[in-house]
Length: 354
Figure (cartoon, helix red, strand yellow):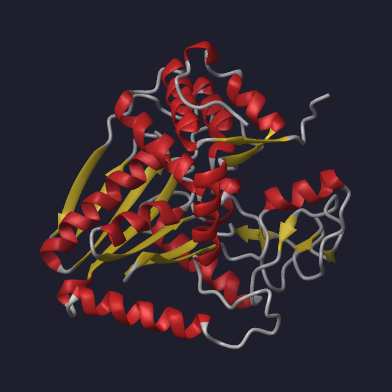
């Protein structure tokens, strides 16, 4: 008998087709559908399941509830030679973020460096997807977004900022770009909930309860502890400065909740994207070669455990991409059933689940 925990391996093309059909059925405009589906599937194939295709039912619930605008009037205002702002009109963050990054790349081609903010947006998934767009154009991409307050403030018993991600992607010779994409906590709240459901204890130093005391019981966890104490907290605040204060969006503990707030409530999120034109500094081929040399030098460092080689940021995702391109994306049975329920599977043309 099949269970909710059974893993199905779904080809990426099937996920793309199902995503497009589901969003279309929900009334999402075609030019908005494309970046949303590509962003979700790209993220899943790279092994970042927390921000991948599993979120599709949640997003569609947001469309139906009124949180996400399926037919937005997005506009871009360039306020300086290398600065601009996208008003997302409360649509999908994937579509708004990619629009902003493409504008940043175009402006950086002229000015050497450019920054574009986004306001009135919603959850945008993995920041690395946007930053890769710049790297594929021979530039360094930086991407930031703020999030629901979950990070315990040092010296306080409450959370004020979210585990706001920081991302840098740069082209590297002979392989996919270097990618550092990390939140300011060692664990996500989704992972905490999964541990609670499985009855597993958490390692120390990850979470705190509602009163601000550290705990290893995921069922009691209400807050996430920042990496490096005040350093991780400071990074979260830095991201809020870029994504909220610069864009005019709610900041800190005023940021809306992805889960918990009514699906009729707009997220009002802000994002921040930057593109650096490497050619404005030196030969891009030389840069890519030097980055490759640096990465290989790190990988050649002696490993404590020979079965676990030293890696640079992004290496686990590159490994996942190879495996999942061959085997398909592992999707929990419960999530797969949710996705199936959103589309007419009799009209699917892609390869079916294994």
